[in-house]
Image (cartoon, rainbow, N blue to C red; front, side, top):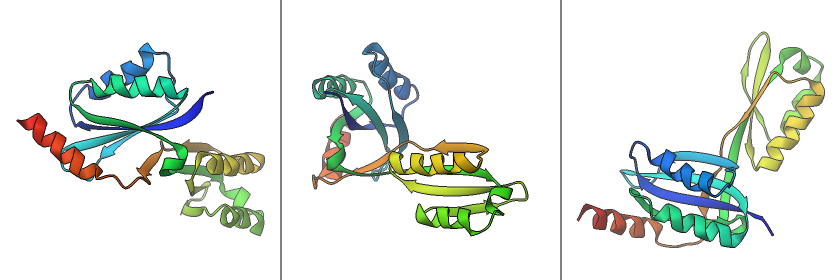
Length: 177
């Protein structure tokens, strides 16, 4: 049975690495549900957070292939219950929707969202949460009218207390040797 997995790839910040990592997915015909890249807590190491829906044996092979890529320090995969994760969504809604009274304001509060910008033609609302939560608010805004919607990729931190930074630092030192 397919499940959702979050893959964390730690690598040096090298040009072309993202393409090589994505090619591993493409060759296996695996769709990437979400992809986020950023600096990690260790100088010189970047983190790719990738969400996929596959069988566990597929994700094991996928991570093993990613691990073999040049400039990849280490790749891990996690089940949803092994991580804490969030996404950010932005909604651009017509100002007149908000002018309909307190209903829209109550909707924003009920979804623990916040207003980022109020312009003459539109209002920008931000919601952080899991994909299901941001989709739920999107459906509500679609009933009233919406100009734009965008959601970030997943950002995730493991619940498992492994000495990750120590491991990554040791691998970085090995690579420099």
